[in-house]
Amino acid sequence: MRLKLVPSETNWDFFRLWKMWLGISAAMMVIAFASFVLQGLNYGIDFRGGTTIRTQSAQAIDVGVYRGAVAELGLGDIIISEVFDPNFGPDQNVAMVRIQAQNDEEAVSNDVIMTVEAALQAVVPDIKFVSVESVGPKVSGELIQTAIIAVIVAIAAVLFYIWLRFEWQFAVGAVLALVHDVLLTIGIFSELQIKFDLAIIAALLTIVGYSLNDTVVVFDRVRENLRKYKTKPLAEVLNLSINETLSRTMMTSVTTLIALVTLLILGGDVIRGFVFAMTWGVIVGTYSSVFVASTILLWLGVKRDWSKPNAEAGIQVPQSE
Figure 1 (cartoon, rainbow, N blue to C red):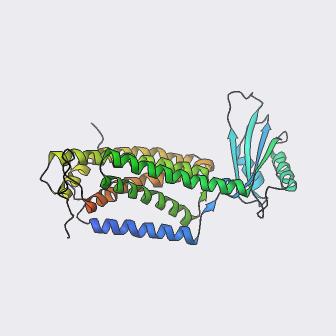
Figure 2: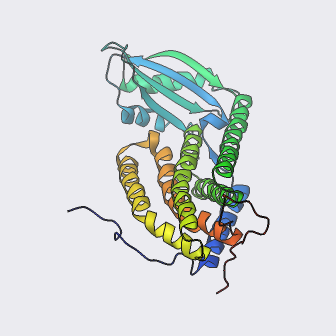
Figure 3: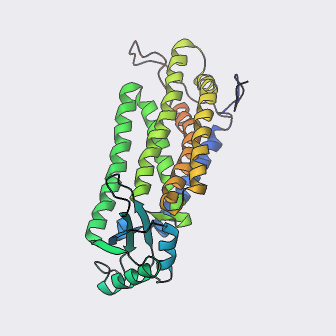
């Protein structure tokens, strides 16, 4: 007996309320953008600058113990992670302690570093600070610019790819869906003031790829059905295509969410921001591939025959309710 998240054959009308779906998406994007402008993001050490301390000890590392030792120092954002390397010996337990810049200074002062060392030595007597490196505001600003460029280039590449593979209407729908997903993800981080660092940029780029994959699967089926059903209205062809790929879309999304939710609960603080971004991205990406990309395509219309270019080719226009 096979598990089915949706029936094998469905005939749901996804475009009966297409104006409402576009309105909801537009409203959420406006709220996300307003939150970003008014509140901004809670940037992590990667974007605000700070100091990274590499520690080593013979005692096994317990991140919770380390975090508890420095939590009472009131130093703001502190990230602690264990470093795994097969070349390390049994007495080489290495951790990375990252401390945010204090009072807009270029780096954490020596007094603060000594205070952190004393706090850690109280719980791990043989701990040593192997290296101390600082990331200043200038480097952090460059990271922000590079991250923005990376996201824009990724979306532009998607626009070019979809334009070549399909038609410009498909490209516009896919790119607006990606912008929708990225903006809503940034918006939720702004609204909840969750720490935003380089790992979240990696999550955003992964979300772009995931959402694009879902959208291309639907668009491939749309193109096939447009050639197969030449006289059907565009809305019916889109509905048929989404219904035919719905089982695959739901199975992919749900199985991905099962893994992500497990990591969100059990993964710990180090990867929680990344996993949250991915979880939110899968949800909005699945939504946008059905209710944003396809609805934009319905709104723009599309030529019905790619094999014979014709300036008078019919364009399907959505009917008003």
